[in-house]
Image (cartoon, rainbow over the protein chains, first blue to last red):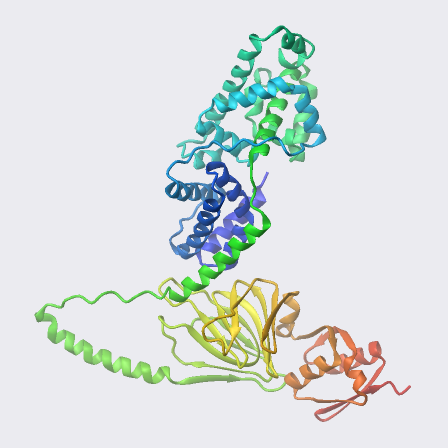
Length: 203
Length: 346
């Protein structure tokens, strides 16, 4: 996935380093929305995110000549923007404000969520709250922003790509543990509920 | 990895598996549908992994907030304004002067003398103006001191000074029509490139655009990059307009009006093609007069309002006459430099 888009990110980056305003525009059009979304996961102040992001793009252009050659343009943008946002807002935590589910998943996904069941969903939500900020951020980057492990490693300043993979593996294991731990101390009602769905939950 | 030992965690952390669940990758689809068939014993793990991926995606989805189109647009305008402002100021300040030891004074005096000679020569030659001109039906390509290339269309002229200074904006004065391919300069220079015309001034970073100024009207069509435009009289840049690629700006009376166009067509003359799109015969006649010095007369004034779409090579006007005659049922006769257009006599 994305080998074409990666290549053109790289090309735009090279052009930007030579001071091309249209390359900046291409990068802006592609990354502004997702960086904005990412920023809002880090801090809740919407205008702070917008202001920081604006200045970030202006600086990208004015410092174009000093920009280094990077292969992972997307991850690089995330890292720099994150740092800038961190400087402006002293406490950055990956604890997005929880909102009610007001979106509609695709019919297929809806079906899968139904199979998972409301109780398990709530347990999973609870488990997510028990994770560290870093783990939650990794999950956001991986499952929502579709980032690969190379990019995640860079954004989270992990020295090796495999650390990102390990972090994710451990996180998923923790989530599952939390879900089954609670499942074992269930009331009769929910036990019955689970028996009726047991092939879904137990090996 | 050994398929037999695939755990739920393995599946959930596999990017290709995630893409399959999200349905975003046909290749992953083929692989995992196949895998599912070959490993019926793993159906429980598969099921659980799938639920987890969907749940994780959905939870995040319910938490994200997006930038709205207005925010995206406002920020973009802000950034473009800032960039133009800063590039105007980006000429590097000269390094601060240092104290010179007395022993070097003599050398300094000599250097000063030579330098002042140089400066004198520089100022002198800088005031030397360069003027490029084209006649009717002629185009010319000019390379400026900064290696920017200007292609002059017919019956046009471009004026500039012979030597450009690093800390000054590059300035040229145009009458007529030209296509600009402006070089982007290094950090230490004043990056502005300004094209002055009678009606408007165009301020540029590195970019490609077509500029036409005829009959007290001007038109800028931007192919690449970023330019800002203001009325020549608006010296304080009160009402500056910023153009994006694909934009066409026209000056109409005192207003600057922007629309979106196919930029290629506006610079087609560089490839020796005249191009008209839903243009009135009046506009075409003006073009013929501007570029070829032809005087066009309409037998009936109503004819001038007819519209035409089409193109022809710039050196084959008879073909244009033929196309006009056939499509609009006209009779066109040329005698020397005058052209008579009337209804078909058949």
